[in-house]
Length: 243
Image 1 (tube, rainbow, N blue to C red):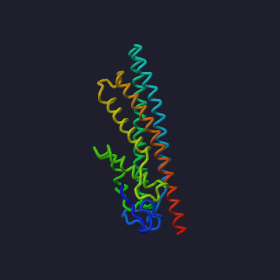
Image 2: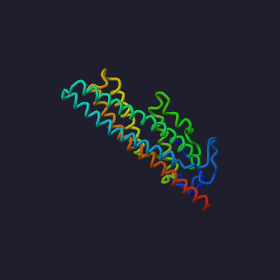
Image 3: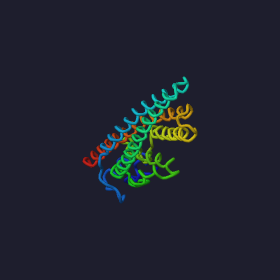
Image 4: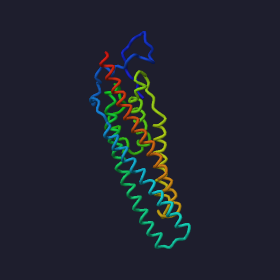
């Protein structure tokens, strides 16, 4: 994370300056904009995450049912009908997940664009890059995590007077779950020749379970970042009025 710039006072501790320059001075970042609440993007993202989580539960129920039918030697017609149902539910889950991923990327763009208005004078990236890392091969394994850590640290009102911003364990948990989800879906999709076999279905069920838990972490992350940004903006506004 980058080190913030503050008004210099030789009699103040470097760890606890009275007020960040960003609270009183316009940022020199070229893409800086006035603070704009990301509440709408956050609400849409959280709503879509909730829809995905509901479809996770339905998909998991279908997977359990399919494994039960296979293990109890159900008739081929029954297994085939249930396979079509499971494929339909998993397809709906994939579409919901795609829409949610798009909303999350858009939300990332908006919250990163707010960082200069919240006192970040030297952001590590740009809003476009922050959102675009999810589409860059190899880099997406790490860079979105770095960006989200920066977003958290620069948005946290509790760190408004700290030189070195810290991330949150929630960011680490969210990213670890995301990577675990990706591995589970890879195993479910490419490791079994028959995508409706017991092993593939069990992997898919595990992926849905991890996806559900990841959704919880993502909802908490989006909610808290949105809340933190608004609180820090209000705090900076009060400092500016009192100055």
